[in-house]
Amino acid sequence: STYKGVREVSHTGATAGYRAYLGRFPDQQLSVALLCNAANANPDALGHAVADVFLAGALRAEAADTVGVSLPATEIASRAGTYRQILTNEAVTVKVEKGKLVVGGAEALIPVSATEYRTASGQTHVYFDAPRGQSPVRVVVGGDTTRYLPARAAVATPTMFAQYVGTYVSDEAEVTYTVAVDSGKLVLRRRPGITVPLTPAYYDTFETPESTVWFVRDRSGRVTGLSMGLGRVRELRFRRVR
Image (cartoon, rainbow, N blue to C red; front, side, top):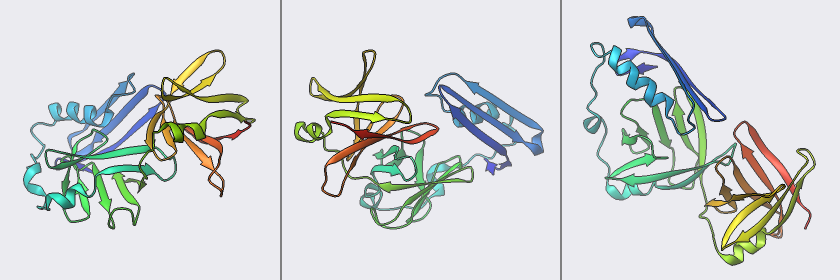
């Protein structure tokens, strides 16, 4: 891709609590390698901040506020909400801050058309291909495309929480979880005394510091199990035994 007018070959990576960025700027014969041991680090932004120092004479400044098109505030606001990643069910929140869309607390998105937004760096493109709720949203970062769907709002009420309470078993992982209500909040418990809070993300889906948890229902609407996504583990299934 290109970064502020210069050619770039780069990739980011993440696993466990580690984050990494490796970028090569061939025309300037510069490489930047970044290793982070904090899960909340943004390696792409940090790596480019380092590149900014060494490429100061070659970079082209971009007038972020004048590159895009002007859209009605109501149209921009209509894109806000919670979306779920189609493959992993992870939640991402799109908010309006100072009149601009912000995805997951990252850079602001600049509208370049009625359906396409991008960050000032040009590294991330978001495509709203149809009115909200009618088509997947495409997020393209460095050529990699991830698709999201608008998510149904979470229902965090005692009546709803009561539907989840029970014992769930995974024969594959040989793990048993108990879902309970503790001080009005839903929690996961497992031996030997570990309690993990479940934070509502969207309907039937919760987040923990390390995973996404969603409950599975049968055709009658009864909760029959749960699934977990833990980074590189996708849809680890648990059946409800009581």
